[in-house]
Length: 321
Image 1: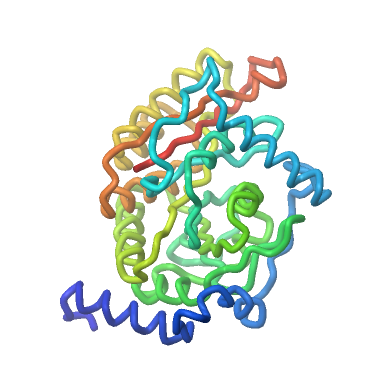
Image 2: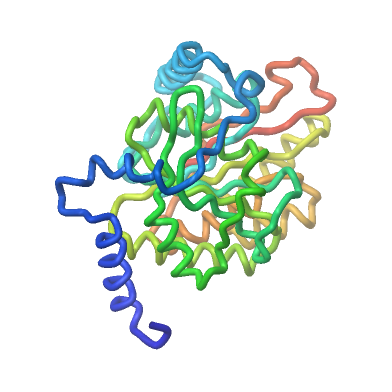
């Protein structure tokens, strides 16, 4: 298939994905049930710490955050963009007491489609993927709200398109919180969602650009609405006055849809944005599928809650359309 035109490759891949799923229209809604028998369930590791462990409390917390996010606020922008036009989102992954309102402001702007591809940073330092791109390829991610199935067919298609640059690596995911913390917002917004979760362990533009191209090809090949979700906090553990300036510099690159400049700026100006590589790859993919605009819908830092402005972590919600 290496020498085939791109449109022919896309048609062939789309046909193979549909064949593997056995999609004849009537089976689309029952597809989630097939994932459980084909893979491992990844249990929650930060329930009770980053967000409530009790299912009823968690659902109520997220629902309240989303409802509040849909109301205009003086300190943050009012929702303007059409929800159906959003191609990608950047959302934070800290404890909900700190970053929950910001994540909610981002998710409130999105009509969550059936498929979400999540790109997260590697906080643990554990990575068995030689490429630095770790995929959980099947099964499900569990939260107190239930299991979120991994779309095994799309994950397989992603590996095929990437030439196996995207590698199966459960070890990178097992104790990584940056995917898990996003899931309750997705679950409350849409019950039948499927995910393709990636954890990224490099910090350079060229692999980010390549991954962006791969994801854009995947979205074109599978032929269904797909949301890209980059999980990231902003600058870490500096005084608020410094952190706010660094966060603004990083967000300027994000709103310019310039992943290369984002990575260069973070390195040059020592901006410790943990998910800069996932965001850069997401920007590359979003541009390749037609995105032209990125809007910061919320910004705040941990000092707003803790009152400690000596060492803050920044959070932003960004929608890309």
